[in-house]
Length: 133
Image (cartoon, rainbow, N blue to C red; front, side, top):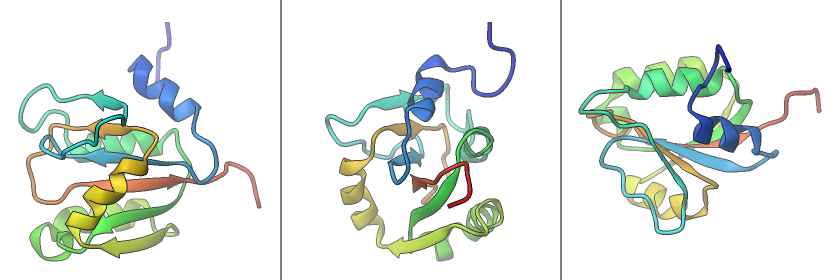
């Protein structure tokens, strides 16, 4: 039995299968996931697990070189934005309207649904490499 890190077998497998430049999404409880995109649904109830809990666990096991986030988070959820920027200080950021972020999600390898109930906690992450380029 695995004793640390991500214990959800589905999520652990998807992370292990990521290659350089692959994208995946972490979103809130209401984020619409396009048909055909595999979903790791972690929602237990409103607020459980939080976006931060999931993001922390994922970042402990994943190299992220860039991310896409909605412009609206700047005004509607600055506290979460600050957290994201602190967690990914060296990652390339792309700002898009939330509607465009939803459109871009059709191309992700998988999506993780959290129990987050705050505004705009949706992010598309781009995998990096774990060795020097």
